Length: 103
Image (tube, rainbow, N blue to C red; front, side):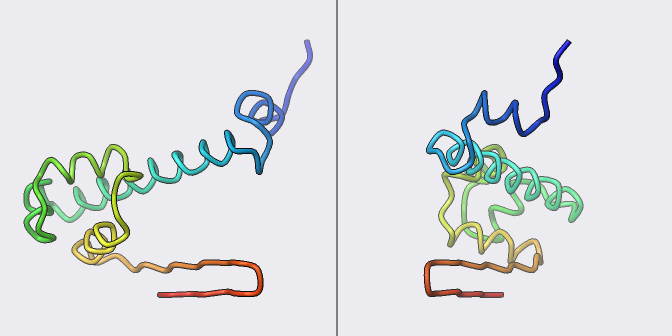
């Protein structure tokens, strides 16, 4: 029986790193992880979705959508959520000949 590494399986099923399909997969995975982190932190802070929504000025339904799929959220909304959850946010953007860090 032939064995494969995780990288080999990902390359075959999702696409190699740098391809559009792989980039989309990686982005969606990161957004899913952000949503799960928001949900877990909200629960640790003993806040309901409605209470967190009130803190940042959105409806409970928007918090629910954010926790299940953060890719639809604006940076402004995410930043307000992180602030309400007392999270430290560090943002780093790397472009050719330019490196910006905010945090």
